[in-house]
Length: 201
Image (cartoon, rainbow, N blue to C red; front, side):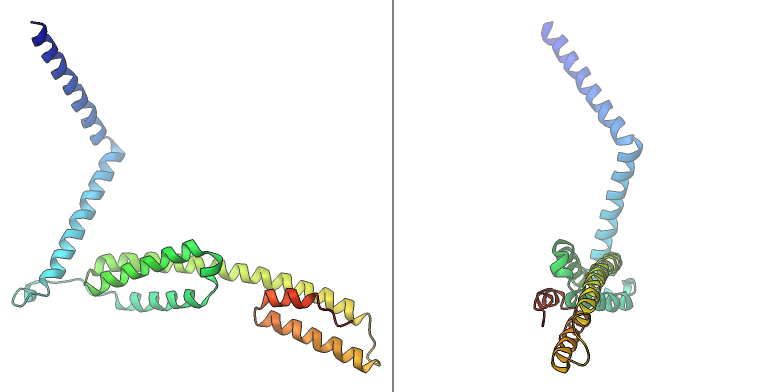
């Protein structure tokens, strides 16, 4: 008798757990999340299956793949090349490495004819690449403005200490200032800061 009651209690407890889980699954956000995950899985599976079938003779004529995002691929390649020659890898190494990993993945998708997946990832890379290049440009603009401000201060200081009649001293100052300005133009801010300490007078 006690055993039967325990069994009934256990069944009731299981039913309550089941109802609670059912409630969670049918709640708005989890439901959306599950549906999205299922939809993504289905789309990915279909895309990969079609790509594989498109390589099989006699079957490939019946398989229609989406057009390759060739233009987007080329634009993204140019963007990644820009990042490679920029200071992004030094200034923002984590973001830079993450973007390069995505680029390798996008290339792999593209080569395997997963064109929908490749297109989505290429768009992400484009957006992140633009953001990263903007951050690098802003950082360098700040460095340039700071260096130019320091240059103007040094220029005023040195020119107030010499006269154009003192040809040797004046020429030394002008050459020194030209060198400083040239370093700013080349973006050599570390060398500029070192040279700033080596006053010719």
